[in-house]
Length: 425
Ligand code: ASP
Ligand code: MG
Image 1 (tube, rainbow, N blue to C red):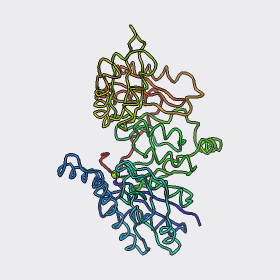
Image 2 (cartoon, rainbow, N blue to C red):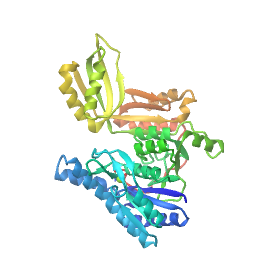
Image 3 (cartoon, helix red, strand yellow):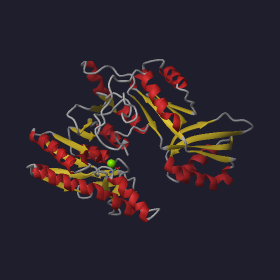
């Protein structure tokens, strides 16, 4: 029989009424004659509320205890959802990540899934029950401790489960009708996409699009698992995330237009660091990046200036939350590396255009930079891939830059997108 994994995000299960509505949807799916397994996130903004609470108790909460605390959020929603499903006449059994065999590395707050042994879930299904799995969590086989996968990690739980159980599709239910050409919360004329390739979705997720967790897309691509992103508040078909071949087949059959640009995203979470006056000789860049990597900071863009008088500047962007640790480590290494100074700039944004059609269509860069120029946006850094152009600009300019690009590439819809729920937190 075919198996569907359905994942419901926090805004879809924000209160008792929403949980009953979601339960109805799950029960209806099961009664069409397919097997269903469910992954659920914590209710509404409750993960943020638990985080706030933790920092009131301790400014730097112990990581192990933080994971214990945060996993409680999903434990509440899974049990309530199972109760609501029961109430509608189907059997449901909830499982924590550890009960469901979600095995992860031991690193708290950013654990990686290393294996899934969903025997109990499979047994539940074979006995006619609907398993409901807590998203975002697992257990380390080494430490036996409970772990979390990083914010938004329930998407990754769902795709990992779907892959391990051989599901036909992983449905990700959210508060908008799929993946849009831009975040409909900030660009009201954003359009829903019929389909995007894994590659485009990876670029969009890395560019700050919050609709899907980056690692879930990587996982789906690796296992060629179709993801269907849709709203739990409507019956509309959402966006399919598929292989490039599968998207090409949709175009071939006339089910969608050949896409050139799939979207514009922005990210306000990065900071810019400039290491000034680096001696221009082999090994300097290596030393700098080794120091930054030693604190586990993830670097995004890198630019090196033309050198003058035997010295150069290296500018990079990295996750804002990693910036302080990276700077402290660099300052400590300053005497041995021999650069002159570090300049820290948190007031930046990254604005990104993504589209697989860039490969074939000339003139995309010209339109891109003309649109930014006409919007009065100054570009500080540029980076590209085959299917992406990203720039760093002032954070205040980001909304204007995104709107200008959305219009310049003909992405504006005729009507405003619907945002059904959620605070976008
Ligand atoms: N509840 C977790 C979070 O808010 C995981 C998730 O929603 O996917 O980040
Ligand atoms: Mg959440």
